[in-house]
Length: 299
Image (cartoon, rainbow, N blue to C red; front, side, top):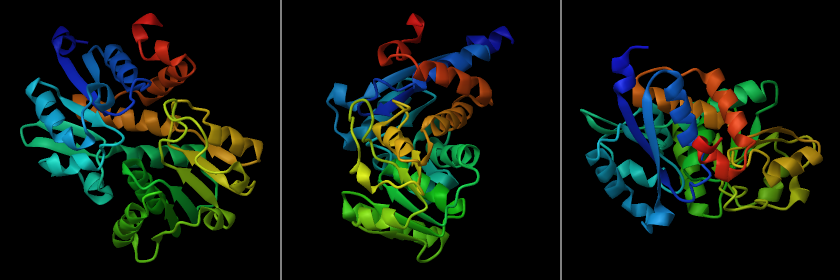
């Protein structure tokens, strides 16, 4: 690797709430080191900074002014950030949510690597399951991305549920316009939806280390249901553990996390990373306590 390549510093970051346990900094910095690059990946936690989610536009302005190459964006800012951007990729425009912003000559351009990341992880982890009728729990930015991915994988009926009923209905309308009338609908009857579903995609923050617990009563799970998780920290959420106990096939959030990180890395640096190496590194980090995984220099 040339010395000029290693001299380049790729300064990037992550904007969101409760992001202390995120493995993104370690993933990006380690892969950059393997490629002979220098990457500095910073957490910008709106909770710690006491910044409202609606101020994400100001955070974009500040990070761009500081010379960042771009930022990843996570809960609860993935949809709020859209109005502050100068352009959107096709996936981001379709989904209506952004998890990666690249600063370049055209301004701040939003991308959605969650969608492709989930699609790739699902195809690898649950390649032979039935996907005709799927329940999507969560209509936020992650839910929008995985809902789009599920429909692009062939789901005929996507039933969307969120505590914010109008947000679920709006996502159903958006997805139906993109993928075909009637293929997505909103409901508040989770029990009824799960009873006849082939699978469940969980896309709320419940189960994260900062928000532990089950998103619904375990009794609603049944052994003919597969369960795919978006949360990856911890990899073994209470939902996945309970689903496996009840005979469900499961998919943890690790594959999506690695795939979306690899896609973001390429957008930030212009260089394709080694995904298998990133996957190995991710699994090593995921087995460590959060305090160590968050500080790779201690590992």
